[in-house]
Length: 71
Image (tube, rainbow, N blue to C red; front, side, top):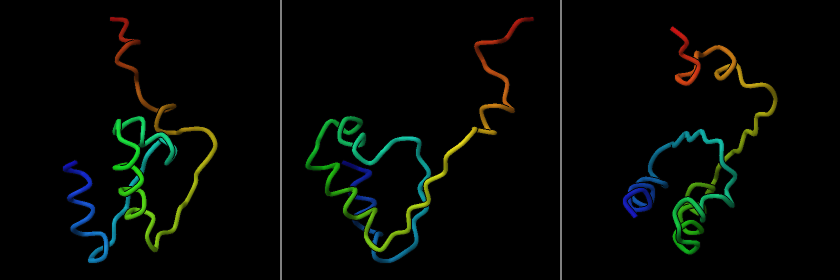
């Protein structure tokens, strides 16, 4: 609810850049509230430009995993 209130307060007053690895339809599951997720996505997608990147993740390729720590 805090995220919604924050976005609701600023979405017509400033630019917002959000990066995520979840599809918009997955937000309802993450927030456990389809109505809230829909309202949030309405505000986030208002006058927006979506840039969908695909391909290999350089971030994951170039970082050491915490789970591969073999000292």
